[in-house]
Length: 561
Image 1: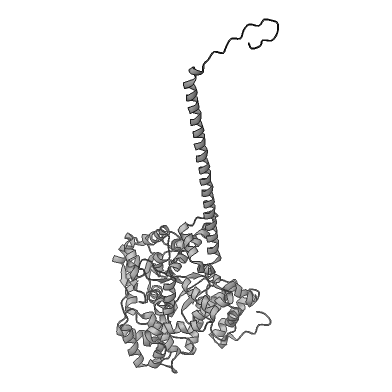
Image 2 (image 1 turned 180 degrees about the vertical axis):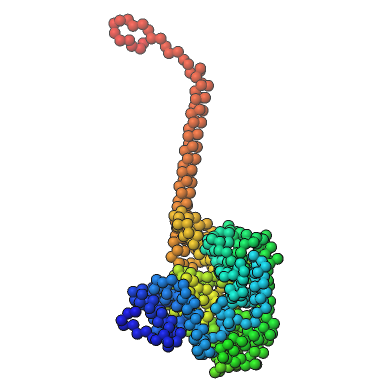
């Protein structure tokens, strides 16, 4: 540690201990200036500096960004953060850490706060023990991701015995290139790890984000061989119910949906009360009975509304009175339907003009607009995409604001909406999508195509259809939203198109000249043939013998008589 460092005593608490570890990591990396670290990770220098100050627990995204900016591996740091978070909660229950997740899903580290789904989690665990490939089906808002992560994963790790004891659990989402990205983890494509459970969350991304039918088929084929075999490699698919029809079009997936699936059901009143009250009790808090009754009734009237419930509870906790969550605080937060919109509007309206513009562009990049009646879905956005949306400081400010409000999730590699519920619950976002729906569809195609072009080495003669080029011409405002890769792809495709046009014009000109030349030659030949025929027909009549001159008399030149 550097001579001028003044580390806090690790005994001062979990936050100070974690901050001290960050400072040591930076010292071991040569004490790079915070400005340089900020350029590496896109968080501001001030944010990184505060993470190592030890005054408050940084977000997980900031912590991982700090580690990455020091050139270190993130292995173990997420676990250290969760450990510090739990210790902080134990030391000051109910004060600093919310017992509710808002729009963010429950993870396996949150299982101590995950209530109301015990029976469904048991049923899912039992299904995975019987079936090599199983599917969890449920509509948006039913809590599938939380059930997989906070319900199933702890059971897999704690209860597996016999041959599967010590099972490795891996969780992936398909993304735009599912087979290419996750090949090494797939049971029939990469290295076999006995006793591995592969959880494919948000399996519907295979149909909403992956536009390559061949890659989609390879991914499915790599998942399915485990079915009907004695393989210790197990697969669990989390599928949004409105995309189950897509699965039924594939024979292998159809067999899984029909014979090895579990449907996520609505919580009954008792389960809802557990989900509302028990997390608060774990933090030493009290939920007013009137609030519990109101929340139970509101959710019962709105079907699958768990993200709305969780966010409303988070905002109620933010407005609590002492240790009590009250009905009045719930109503001030906007209630079940208004809490998300109110939170989003509060964040958006505090941004200045430049930041608000970046926020709009950031959020729209996180949308995959549905086609042919399919619902709009969220998509993960890479850091390289975000870097194109404004100057670094403005983008950082926007991302931090949206993350702090739990509207988006953010790590060192990517960002995305915390939940698709935000799309329908925030009218402003829904209006942006409807206003730019066709442009968004074109932009999603462009991002995917540019990525594929990059993957094959940016070939110079890449071809873009004239229809796509015409679409880009119609969306002039899209130019300012393009990444450098997307701009380069369009430039290369436009250059190829122009070369093809020049070649076609040259070919047409040459063809026209050839036609004229051929016609002239044909006419000349015809004319020559006509003259020859005419000469032959009148030749005998013109054969007149010339007069014989008189003999020469030898005295001088002959002269005409």
